[in-house]
Length: 261
Image (cartoon, rainbow, N blue to C red; front, side):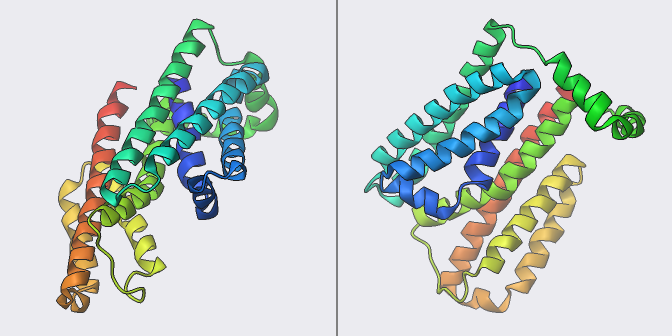
């Protein structure tokens, strides 16, 4: 399970955190440079994730995943070219499913090849790089019932909710052809949405679902006057409900997985 979670963490970081808009646009125009830049980021993130298994295994697995990632992105952009916003949303979902399938295949390859955590790498972290930190945090780590797998699930959940959630909200709004004046659709709104999803995800993970109503109420009060504009009201409702659904879905999945780890 640890291997798959590390692979998922590397994927969401490379795809949603470290992929700027200019790279997305370059790939959309089928420019080789865009694919190479993104493929390099995927490779570096994958090596960083898999280095716990040894440098040789990390390089091999990262190279295979990066090549598959580039191929999937190329096919996705080929299919997505000229597609309607609604169809584009479906292509995006299929693209992410394809990436997940590659990571599952990589896990099977790792299991078949009997890939294990490298004793040398673990020893380096525990005895050389972070000896005092490891000793100091060990009691709290054990007392709280934490583990590497649980920490990875929580990290993935927050990254997906914050960054992938923003992409999903934008694509849903495009699919419904909902837009507003630039002065109303500011970057502040995007960041507010991110904070909103962080709060909602946190409330789900700590089993405080009723408190989510206060988050939505506070956001609605701040936009109360602007809701008189019907176009903005549609934009606000679709965006907010999509954002909330993403946060709740991620939280429910994470909360269901954590007890099993």
